[in-house]
Length: 382
Image (cartoon, rainbow, N blue to C red; front, side, top):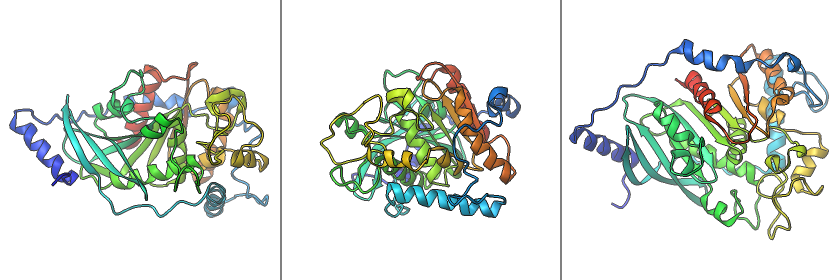
């Protein structure tokens, strides 16, 4: 048989490891107090931004102007937000819940096994990525990492501080690293369903749909605790992780590394939701891409601006699930004015410490921001 069922392959791999004398490592105990100490300061806005909401329309107002006053009201409002955005971006095909990861190759690295895997992330398209499983016993939390290609997150590229999957695996997480390798090579970057010439879903939403199917297939892995699966990514991957976690409730938590969490054309190409591979899709050939501002006629993106809709509404869909913004040049400290709206929703629901943000000057992540990001997942998932 060309491809073995993943669970059988994992069992054989661990048997081989034991046969050559490598013993399973003991999972490291988490010092809860120390982990919380690393992340606690980032759940509190600075004094100058506390209880400030900017010009963003409150998610606690229905589109007809009525106020959300109770948890039941919020559930209705939440459905209104999600259905409105999904109608605008294009409805997803059915989520695929009946497939298993197909293993292509495996290699033992340090204290974990790296599997090259394949699955359908849309009904008509397969993808290949990497599943990393630490050599520890029992059910484990898991994180899906998303980027332009899957090699960076597992530490097999020259992009520093973007090896999220590797870092998580070394901390005892199962990780699944995914990327849009072929479209990145083609410089079309995203996922187009059913095809690039006639996409019926905005590409950024199609990426979220693909990550949703990744959640479903990862949850079937024997080593994974399906109640403890999160998602993260940087920049392009941050946008991808944000839309996926906001639109699919089964993600337990999420961290978005400098994606541009709201529409802001003053930040140039770093917050370029108008591009045809995000929310400004139109059939190719594309006239101009990687522009610093929108042209004023960028399909759905322009329509969203006209409707006074912004991404803080999607953030609110996370409540009460926790999320972290690992902010850089695209998401400076003043983004608290948008995040405060999610804090208000959580407060209505009776939750504190569910919205956090770190800030750095540069767009690229660094060791300090990554330590908080990893500790965030350790706190909420381990």
